[in-house]
Length: 439
Ligand code: ASP
Image 1 (cartoon, rainbow, N blue to C red):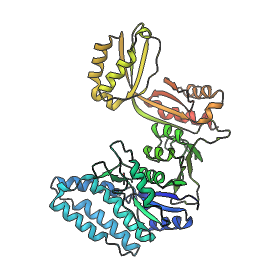
Image 2: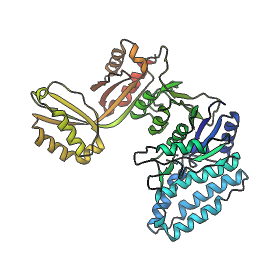
Image 3: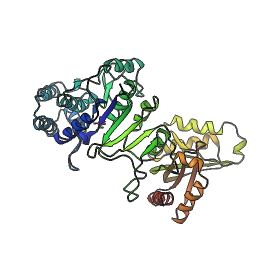
Image 4: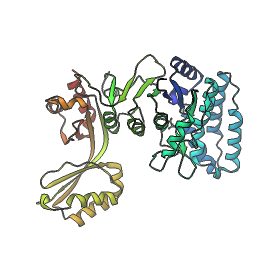
């Protein structure tokens, strides 16, 4: 038997009965699609609120002893409408009544994670009935620690649970913590659930069905008509996601990468489009860059001290100060007597005074300055590695666009070149780099 496929459908793919029908067709079109993971229903139009957000509001109001009927009516109506339109027998109505009763009488006994997880729980129950599949709850099956690391016995349990030839539906977004309580991942976390299940079931492919036909080489709000990416490596996608490109939750990569399971981003509304395949590096024949992405909101600390290069432990001390203040550093270009450190501006501003004070007291620099409102732009691609002149093209493009480069960083892996520019120049920089490589 060829390996099974884990197919995860996001919020927009389960927004109403018509979307459920599309999923049924997709599932029926390939009998390797055996493990179906669903999010909670998302928005049907831009004015609507996601069900998960309505559940968060409900919990907040209930805990404060306030009337939560406004969001609750919307939640209830949405599920009942889907069940009605699909002509199912489902008893979600009584589940919702029971929950409402608990929220009115003992709200303190319902954790926020438990309540919001009901968004995917009920959706998966309806989907299982509609597909004639077996419902398997993610609680307590998917058990993970505070860093979202899944316990090995939990992976073993998944392999056993899904060992049969059946069709299964599993709710995304949550599982169990190490104390045996329902625990959600961070927002958008159904992507992580799907990846974990793909790992646990040794899937051949992890399909992530959404409302776009894969990833684009640049943000279409910045670059007009960017080319789609047919394939991208796990490492490249991490670099691009970190720098602002988002379609898939960044924690969804590792579980698949550990077993070399390809991730296929697909469009529920255009199921014939092949989407983007994320996997081990491929040959990328002829392609220089895979994508370009940018992220704003960085600050740079610039420290100067003569004979810095001779002073042992200078770097360690400064990193220690950042660590003590809960800051992680993003990049650190150095000169002989200078060291620059790029940090996330928002977190830095919360502790700016103490950090500056500690640097002055502990390191006695000649000067320390802060430059704010910077953007980092990552130009990413394994292809850069065997092409000469990539940096020349990139910096030539920035010069022609009159963008002043403030930071340059290229790791030895040669998978990316990162430049820091003034935030105001971010879009212009991305446009010029994209145009230079995609002529
Ligand atoms: N429903 C959750 C959210 O809105 C999880 C997900 O959709 O992946 O964040």
